[in-house]
Image: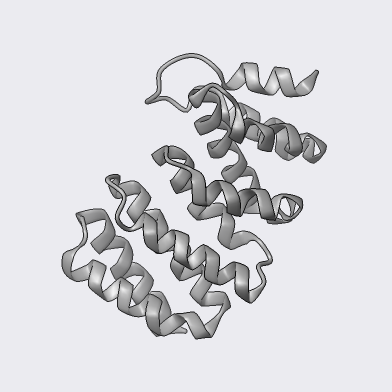
Length: 174
């Protein structure tokens, strides 16, 4: 019953609007047992529900990343298959929050690296952030990620350049 309610709250309106995803994120944050209903929305038939479910799930997992753990395999698969920019950029933010094995981390790095060729500047920028988040966890990834960030500073979009400069400064502090 709640799944239908969550998905109904996320449906309709304009593609440029997150509509009620903040409301759904607050509802799920207060009731984490409903997170599975939110995650199911990532595969919903309605693209608006998918993008808003991704937005709400990303917001919920900023403070409760452990909620993602049971869905690790599915999220990695979706990350590889997702074509919609809104799904891609939210997955790029969420997947690095998972407790990944070295092999899964390499898979995530490969997918995020492929996102750097996306048409969407937002997807590319979130991919850079995701790569940096993974490199912060796994030092073996740092040389490749640092070079990717330096390259984005030289030839990326304005958003990519700004994010890369910020991420490079963070790595220099560490």
